[in-house]
Amino acid sequence: MDNNKRPETMARIVSMEQANSFIDEQVTEIQNQVKDKKVLLALSGGVDSSVVAALLIKAIGKRLVCVHVNHGLLRKGEPEQVVEVFRNQLDANLVYVDATERFLNKLEGITDPEKKRKIIGAEFIRVFEEEAKKQSGIEFLAQGTIYPDIIESDGVKAHHNVGGLPKDLQFSLVEPLKFLYKDEVRIVGKALGLPDGMVYRQPFPGPGLGVRCLGAITRDRLEAVRESDAILREEFAKNGLEGKVWQYFTVVPDFRSVGVKEGSRTYAYPVIIRAVNTVDAMTATVENIPFELLQHITKRITNEVEGINRVLYDLTPKPCGTIEFE
Ligand code: XMP
Image 1: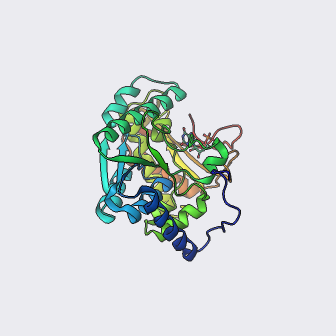
Image 2: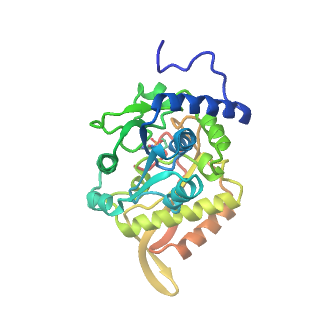
Image 3: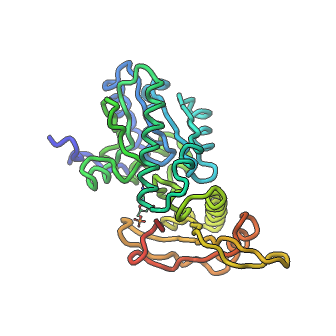
C-alpha cells in the first residue's frame, strides 16, 4: 500500500461527529506509536501545527514538547495567542523562544527576496535544533503535514513551514493530519476546542512579515507592517470581510514620498493594502472593498502608524502580480 495515499475508504470529515471519531482513532494510534516516549513539535500557531499540537496534547499530554520560535516576523498578537492557548488553556509543555534579535541581525541589509527566505528558513532550523538538543528522551517529531502538501510536493512539506525538517535530527515522524484536506483540519481543530481565530485564520507565509517589509528589513518599517496589518484585520473583522476574503495584508515598500501633517512636511513610507480571493493560490482576483471602508482604513493607518504618510490599494490580479510582493 502507498503510505502517502489517502485510503479510498476514508470518508470526508464534514461534521463534528466525524471529527470526534477521527480524534478518538488518532489518539489511540498516536498512543500506540509513541508509547512512553516524547514528541517534539515546531508550533508556529498556524492552523495545521496548532491542530497537531492539540491532538497530541490529548493523546500524550506533556510528553509533547512544543517549541514556538518567534522569529520577529509574526503578526501582532500571534506569539501571545500561542502562549495563551497552549500554555495557559491547554496546559501544554511549551518552550517559547524569542529569537527576534537573531533573525533581524541575520537579515540586516539583505534585499533579495529569495535570500531573505533562505536566511529565515535556515535560521529557523538552527534555533529549532538548538532547542531540540536541550530536550532529552525525544524520539519523535510531529509535523502538521496535510494531504495537499503530500500531493503538491512529493511528500516533503516544502512550502508550508518555514524551513522544512531539520536534516540531522534522527526522529521518526508523527503526522496525524497527513490524509486531511484543509477544511477537514479546521473541523478537527474546532472539535478539539481551538479558538476560531486560530482555526479559520487566513494563510500566512512561513517567512511572515519578512516578505511584506520589502527590500532590506528595517525595524521601523517592520513595525509599520505589523501595526498596519493589525488595523486592516481589525477593520475587516468589524465589517464582515473576515472569512469572506481569502487573504489580506499590508506591505511597506522601501521608498518614501513627501506628505504634510499638522502643517509640517513629512517624508515617509507608504502602506500598500492587498486583498485577494482565490481557490488554489495559482490565480487570484482582487476583492472589491467598499470605497468608504478603504478611506476609513487609510485614515486610521496614516493617523495611528508611525512613519506612514500614504496608503495605496493594489488592484493587480494574479497573474500578472503574485499574491505576495516578494
Ligand atoms: P504567491 O505570492 O506565490 O503566493 O502568489 C501564493 C500563496 O503562497 C503563500 N506564500 C508562501 N507561503 N512560504 C509560505 O509558507 C513562502 O515563502 C511563501 N510565499 C508565498 C502566499 O501567502 C499565498 O498564500
